[in-house]
Image (tube, rainbow, N blue to C red; front, side, top):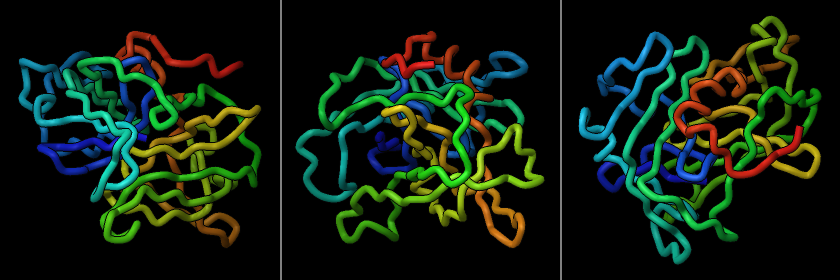
Length: 227
């Protein structure tokens, strides 16, 4: 789990997905005007925009307020934003590669796996209104739901989740074949819909953003997550 910090303050969550890249939510960078990379990708590039220099990534953190003896703070050199319809993600390129430990671990990416309805998943993140005075990292259990008419082929749905802005960018993760897979990027702006009298939260499937993620991370993922 990563804490994306702007000028030293937590803004959003993220996950380590490559040797020097963190995946998050593009909405965390609203208000910035990136330079155009091409018709599908937008990019912040250090030296061309002040945005990257304003951000750091903290890995290994449990509490936003209090001691975190195992955390590591890394500078950001580049921020790539998705401009793909329905896939609003961001990839932050780190200045150096973090050393993996019990407290700093990557997360497998869902590249088209099928999670059956009712499968248990977890949402993880920080928010100022939860986690007590020290704002401890929170995990909320949910389950995979039928998307109904919510463009099911492009969407991933769970039971209703009440997400606050600080949790945006964090992972929605599900376990399969002994590994944890990130199925979606959390967003406080995620839509909720009623299907068969049940309220679900709708996320864009992460596999739609794999072209962007591979581009921004130079195709170097940390662990082989199986087929």
